[in-house]
Length: 377
Image (cartoon, helix red, strand yellow):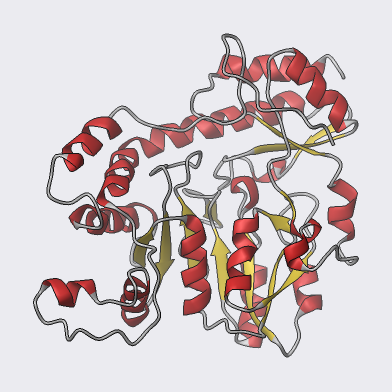
């Protein structure tokens, strides 16, 4: 593994990530800061409505302060309790699996599909036991998981599917938008996601009672709407959290919705250039290439490469940053140590590399990166 420091944003350098902050965000935030509400207020409600109308029509939405909070509340809504087993990807951001530990559950790590680095539905079926209470899937890099197969397994065993869509906002699976495929879907608005609210998240779900419960849990277990209407009985019957989104964050989200389509078009165009330019280069393969242009949300460009360190060093010499970003979770002590039943993950863990893909890139930047790679390493 190459231990290169973060690259400085000097002239001519191409950094790995860059926040997407549309110009309209600034006046929206300033207006909010001059108003009555800067914590959770009417803009949070508006952001929930407009987000649902754009991405998950007909579904309920609950805005929170982080994608990790969205996952934690989704796990609680799904009824995950201490001692439960939850099948979950071995390869993902730790934010997917740490909330399971907070629930007292045991993550059971499933192998990856080597073509997409998403969870392997075949391995999920092999891991099902009488203790399994849910299946968690992550749309790695913006490529959606095999939801049809996962839903079939979940329905057979009467357990929910929770989708971590932190990387797949705006993606589609067989014509259906992400956020309408699982029992609970968690989105992230962290600094470098498709939409950023500096940090934030959203839960997509069905069921008015569950929506109300999650809106209580995100704010200490208090029914804020009843309280503000003067009918609060001054009682808390559920142990809640301080997970609410603020109006400042919601203002960023509302402004970002306006430019989402054009920004997504750019991301998908850049990813398609990577795919087309690298498909005949020996020793490198774009992960999820078959899905690019078919519902892929284009958050990451990941490649599997022979001599990863050599390519990473060559890119750095030419002012291009690259890295691994996520790691298999069983390498961390908190999850109990390395598992021995994930051969696909074993096979690629020294090969995958993330190339720059963000809205501050131009097509010329991506062609430059591809040209460097085409010259060999």
